[in-house]
Image (tube, rainbow, N blue to C red; front, top):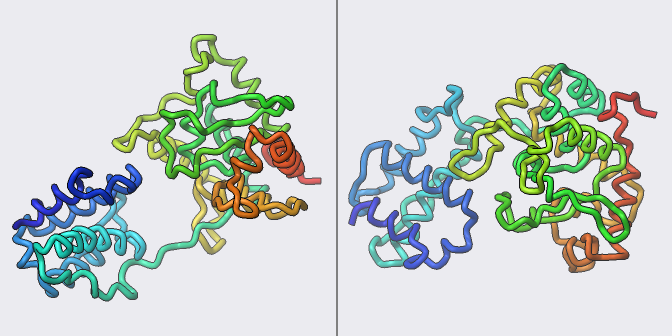
Length: 326
C-alpha cells in the first residue's frame, strides 16, 4: 500500500470518523503538509518509510524547505508538518497496514528556526498607526482590532447585519452568523462595541453608497478570498504595509497586525472587574464558574451583558481617537 492510498482513506470522513471533528482550516493545513511529504521524494510504499526516511525528511524541513518569502520555517511549523505525517502513519498502524510508525519517536528537539514571540503594539504605536495616510476602511479595521481583540479574519468577515443592539440598547458585534468562517467554534461570540468606536463605524457607514450598506454587505471589500474561504491573508498583506511603519525594531519580539489582539488583552487585564474579561472578549473561553461566556455574559443575558459592556467602556481607548492618554 502506498502512502497516497493511506492519505485518501485518512481524509475520508466515512472511513475515518475522527476527521469529522477536525476544523476545516486544520484539515486544509494537514493536507498541505502531507502533500509536501509526497512532493519531497515522491509517493512510496508505506513499508519503506523507515527511520532513515523520517530523519532525512526532518533534516530537509529544517535545512531545505523555505517559505514563500525565502525564510526557513520555524520550530513550531516544522513540528506541525511532522505531526501531519505522524498522524497518517499512526492511522495506518491502527488499520494493521503498517507494523510501526517511525515518526512517533522522531526527536525534534532544537530543530527549526527559533520563532519570535509576538508582542503587543503600544498605545503610542497604535495612535501613530491610525494617523498614517491610508484608506478609510483600513483605518476602521485597525480601530476595530484595537477595541475588540478580534482576529483579523473576524473583522474582515463582518457584515452590516452583524452589528446589532441588545434590549438594553447596547450595540454589539455578533459573530454567530452561520456562514461566517471563523477559526474555532468558540470564536462565535458577542462583543459590545466601545462607546468611542461607535462614531467611527457610523461615520464610515454614512460615507458609503447605500448599495454598500445593505445587511448582507461586507463592511470591508477589496480582499481576495483564499482556499480557506477567508480573506484574512489578503487583508494581512495590505495592512502590514502600514503596520510595519510603526514596528519598533529595537524591541525584542515580533510585532505585526496580530499584535493588536495582544494589545487588547493587555487592556483587558487593566480593567478593575472581578471577571475573566479577557477570556470572554478574546475567546480563550472556559468562562466563569464552569459556564461559557454565552451563558453568563452573552447578549441574551440581561444581567451579564451590561457588565461586559461596562467593562469594555472602562477601557481607555484614546489612542484610537488620536488623543494622548489621560
